[in-house]
Length: 237
Image 1 (cartoon, one colour):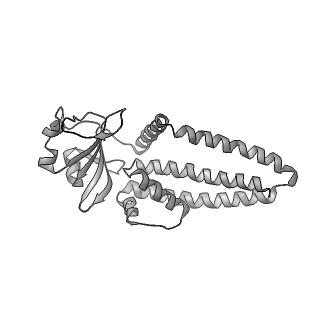
Image 2 (tube, helix red, strand yellow):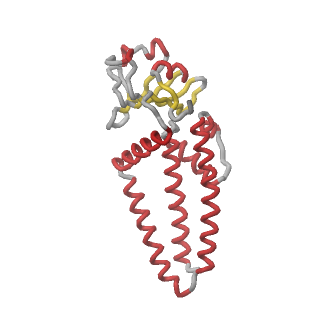
Image 3 (cartoon, one colour):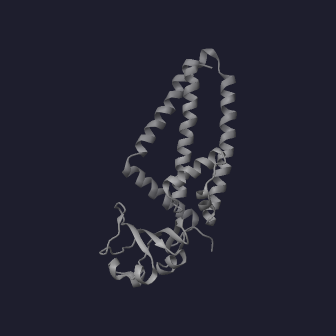
């Protein structure tokens, strides 16, 4: 085996793992899991290394996350076996006269993958990809137009959650945050608000909720769901 071709094949494996881990991490992000935690847990699941922390409990909090966890584990197992067997066959089937041609041809997909990865790093492209996958996930899961709720993390007995507002509850319509009673009556703190087509920004007293907003809130999980008329996305009836 030519050393250059060996390095090229190794690079393809690394790039393949990177792409797959990013895709699965994106899916976990749509269940409300923070990006860094999603990426770390996906790598652990795909590689089968068994590295666990208390954060891994977040993967078992809801039925959709458990399903996605099982799929990720099975995919990683099958992918590892397939890659290993495929490259063993490649190594034994190569002939000396074919090394140069194989090296050149193997560089082409590497360059294509590198271009795609660089393209995906553009913020506008990444945001478009996130919206596309979210829409596809919603259609596949049969998501309705109800407001959706996902737990992101836990602090003691309280929850950091993301609320997606398809409709603003009547009692919160056209009211600034200071007059909503969320903090004083329900002990819910609104930390971030992401208006459609804009970056997430800290909430302030003048913030008014709009349809399509994504809110990052802190409080009792059940109370959050009641106040915003929201339920977990993709859950079974």
